[in-house]
Length: 248
Image 1 (tube, helix red, strand yellow):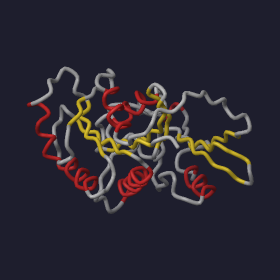
Image 2 (cartoon, one colour):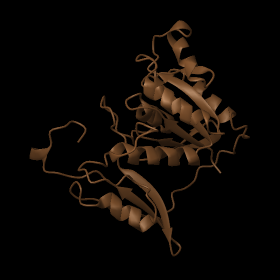
Image 3 (cartoon, helix red, strand yellow):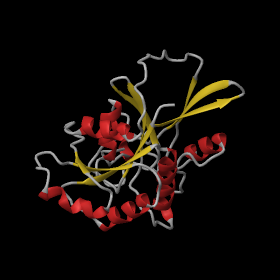
């Protein structure tokens, strides 16, 4: 089994940028917009012969009790439950926040390896500028710049070393042509995510009575009666004349 790495943190700390860096893709939408990611987003990557799965998550509010933030928190908790190691991403330039403390308190209660990663640390010197993050009680602070790639390899090596796994033989897997890729498309708020959740029999995607809840294209593997599928949830489509936000 490939090790699973979950990226967690408050909104707008650069988790999706780091996800794209780790998967060598542009699968996650990235913009200077807090709360952009909402669903669990899976991708695959490798470091030399070592392969891994990485999960991008939305901004985490562990104590959220209602609304879309409660649904996002459920998705993040599920990602953490599935993960072998958790990468807690903080914003090196913004400093420690109360929400960072809430997340750290949640992670410390878990018996699971966790790395504290200070993103947006380009041009910063290790030491005084990052010292405040040690108060989160999660040990060493790893400075990285997901946007520029600085420190990402060292962070990834540290995450995989936490698991003490042997190197896997590098074997390229040919795409399985028997997999049916099924995309669900439509206008915002017509129930696309709810439909996929019904097929899966679980709350895999955030389904909420709010237009535009889904933003990334989320791919979910599914098997029924021996037939393999990839179900793709998509963002709601509208006429160009009604689109005003860049992320849409």
